[in-house]
Length: 617
Image (cartoon, rainbow, N blue to C red):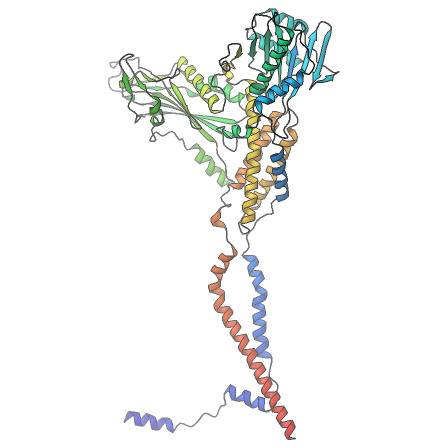
C-alpha cells in the first residue's frame, strides 16, 4: 500500500519549468549567438598564474652556496704538483788557509753529494753551497762555483787558534756560530761548516746551533782532504742542515703528532696505582716553569703547545708483571706493553671538548689540539721494583699517543707515622728532572727526530752531535721540523681545497654558508703567500702562513654544513612536492580542458546554425 501511494504521488508531481544549462547552451547555439569567453579566460588565467608562480617557488627551494674560486684552486694544485714547496737552504764551507785544498768545482761536488742523500725533488729549490777560503792574504768566495766579489771574510786568527785547541770542547761551536752570525751566514736555513787542520784522524762535530766543524789530519794528502770534505759536507747537508727538503718531506710532515691547527696538548698524569700506604704528588707549575717552558718556547715556530696535569689514584693495570729471582724484581716484556695502559683510566681531561663547544657557539668549528699523554706510573708495593726489559730508561713511547714511564718510589715514612690516613709525598727534583729528560726524548721521537739530541750518527765515533741542553731541540732541528711541516701543510691544504671543490661540483644542491667561501679565499691567499715567501729565508713567516692555510682549508671542508645528508637533489624535490601539486595540477588541467572543449563545441554549434539559416533564406 505504501509503495502504491508513493508511486501515485510521484506521478502527480508536475515537471520542472526551469531549463538546464545544457538546454540554454543549445538554445543560444541555435540562435547563432557566439560563445562567451569569460569562463575560458578565468580558467586559462588561473592556469597561467600557477605556471608563472612555479619559477618563484622553485627559487625559494634553492639553497645558498657561494661560488668557489675553482680556477685558483686548479692553478695552485698544478703548480704544487709540478713544483713542490721546499724552503731554501744555504750551506757555507769555510776552509782555513792551512788546509791545502783545491776549491774549484767544490760547490757542485758538495751539492751533488747532498742531493744524493736527499733525493731530487722536481722543480724544488736547490741548496745554495758557498765555499770561503781563508788565508793570510785574505779570502776568496765561490757560490755554486761562481766567484763572488763581495765575500764575507772570517777571522783567520780565530780559525788558527781553534785549530790548535781542544777540538772536542763545546765552546768551539759557540765561537764558530758567533763568527758565522757576524758574517751574516747564520739564521733559519743558513748553516756553516768550518774546516780546520789538526789531530791524527778526521773528526766531525755538529753544534747545537747551525754550525759544524771538521778537523782533517796534517799528514793527509790534498786530494784525500778534498774527497773527505766533499763526503762530510754532503753528509751534513743531506742528514742535518737540509733534512726536510727531500722527496719524502710531505709524508714526514704528515707523521707529526699535531692537529691541522698546528696545536698540541701535552697531558701529564701522575698515576698512583695503590695509594693505601701513601701516594705521590708534584708541583706541576714549578715543573712546567723550570723544565718544560724552554722546550715549548723552542718549538714555538713549529707548533703551539699547551700543558695540563692531573694526579690519578687506583690506576691498576690488567697486565700481571712477572718476577725475576736473579734480580729480585718484577719486569714487563715487550709483548706486555701494548696492554699495559688500562682503558678505564681517566686520562682525558675533556679540555678539547670544551674548546669545541666554545668555538661552535661563536659560529665556527675548531679543529682542536692533538692530545699527547705522558703517564708517570708508580707501581704498587707488591710489584716493586718494576722494570721494562731492554729499556735503560724504564719507559716506552706510543706513536701519536705519548709515552709511559715507570717510577719506582717507596714511601719513606713508616706505618706508625700515619696509622689511619695515607700520607702524600712530593716527587723530588731528581725525579722531576728524570721525568723531563724522558719526556723530551720521547717527544723528539714522536716528532721524527733522534730521541737523544747528542747521539752519535750511525755509530761513527768520528761524527758526534752536541746536545741541545735544556732546550731539548737544536736550532738546526727546528729548521728541519719547519721544512717538513711547511711541505705537509701546503700539500694538505691544497688537497682539502681540491676535495671540497670536487664535492661541490658533484653535488650541485649541497648547502654551503657564505663564510666557508671566505675561508677558501683566505686559505688560497695564505698558500700563495707561503709560495712567495719560500724563496726567502723567512722560515717563521712560511710556517705561520702554511699552518693558517691548512687550518682554514680543514675547517672549510669539515664544517658540519658540508655533509652528505644535507644534500637535496632535484629528485628529492620532485618526490617531496609531487603529492601536493599533482592533485591540484590535475584538477586545473581538467577544468581548462573542459572549458576549451565547451568553448569550441558551442562555437561550432553556433556556426552550424548560422549556416543552416543562411541557406534557408
